[in-house]
Length: 291
Image (cartoon, rainbow, N blue to C red; front, top):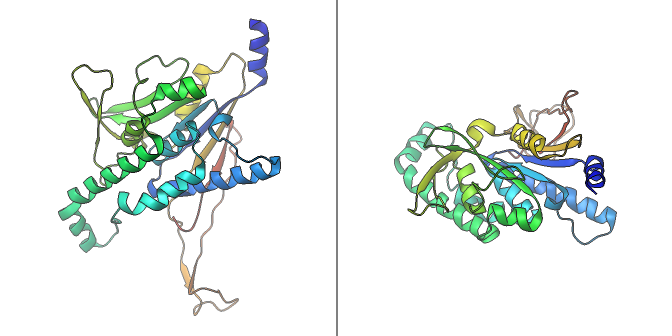
């Protein structure tokens, strides 16, 4: 019996989904996955495809943690796209620019802006994730989670995780709190003060954004995959990143000497992506000139 199970595990790859941080650019990740799932749903002739059920382990940092937890509990990606659209303006009420005037104004009233954004983010996450814990996901869905953050008590990297080999340390942490801890970006967010669910004295733990050390959590995902996959079982990693604003010059229609543009301006940029020959992972960039 054990030999049969081992052979089955060896034939089926251990699949990992890794989702980068990137603030509001998480909407591109969610929208890309939503479109991809919709196309495969139509190809297969089914009403719904569950993204999370296709993976043994999901790792996500910052905004990627939000999408990772949503996928792990079976939320449609369209719901997460709606979360960014409906709540983005309240979570990030003011945009930080290079203008000195805007910068000084942000410093003067930054505390109020950050606190309002924190409250909006908690409310949005609570509506989507409820009171579900890390252990709930593993027991009910059989999906492992790895969410990077920074523990401010030690100023060291910390990964909230529930896998076959992780023990019980993070079992009772709510997904809402885990996402807040991983997305507590300096300047944009307050540090996340999270209650330790297993403490008898209401111990508060403080965390900062996981993007400070693992904005791309692919190494975290790979290490946990190596620790949890069966011997000789192949590992497949799907790593999806966000992107920064493309560099390039805006060429207006008046300046163009050749073919006319339909709009008043056209952002000109170049992107390229390739699969590393030495890496087992496949990277699908979620790039857009709207970043």
